[in-house]
Image (cartoon, rainbow, N blue to C red; front, side, top):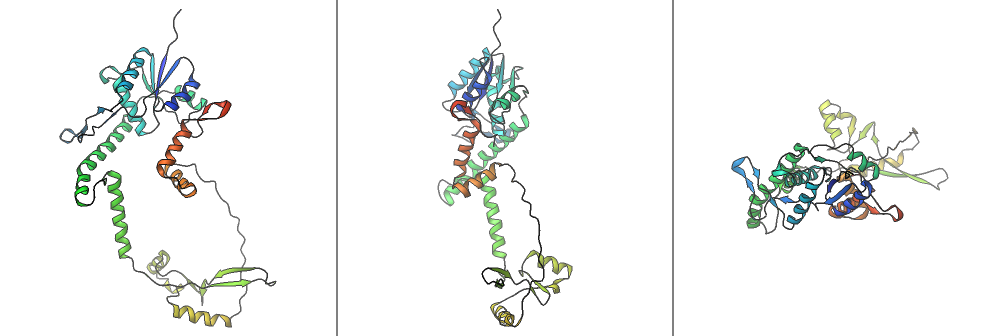
Length: 328
């Protein structure tokens, strides 16, 4: 009697491996790479700038046994499914694993790529039924990002340590962020402060039990606006500035306040509008981090740690380990 075909599924984390193994059954072996298995060396830049910026990858310390185990199990499996995270980092990890477990890094017809956008029975089975090939464009994107990190970090950071303070990082993100800060600082320095005043009155109903506040909106038919607002600039361009005015200083505000008591006020118009509030879109990485920071005071690192746990699966009593969100 012929033995059943065994497939190997490789994911990044052990907790995800545990959840997925439950969904796939006995004909599948699910193993974890525990993140990256290869990276650029720490002791040198690891980028051959003269040879088209080609990276020089080395096995990460402590991952030799993981690679050996994956390679052994891949040889015995009929098919290998690389199920690392569905992003460019995960694509790069899948590419590195494929390079290590295939014959001298060559294309292997039994190695496939699967994308688990949600760790649920339907999500896992659906992805397994639609195997793909490794997306080399995503791999190249991740490699370009890593090469930029290394070149900037190894070339510019030591300069910062000498001129500013030791330990500062000049990576691709920090360098761009610094430029944005400098450009914003230049805009702030060029800004000319313009004084303006607002007048707000408190009005009571006829029963004098309730009150509401209203802001002075128009003076002698001219609408009040902030002097340096975009509206004023646009209307200067159109030549319609005579329709607008502003309270430029305290003396003007005091004069208006002295004139106001001589006038009677009445309701000139009541408008009723239907307001519709659309549901907010699903979280993306940035909005998830912003909301967690404002509502829960979480750091970005803490937020993503919890998000990863929710994606990989949480123990829910009798249901066992269940993925609760799609990949963030």
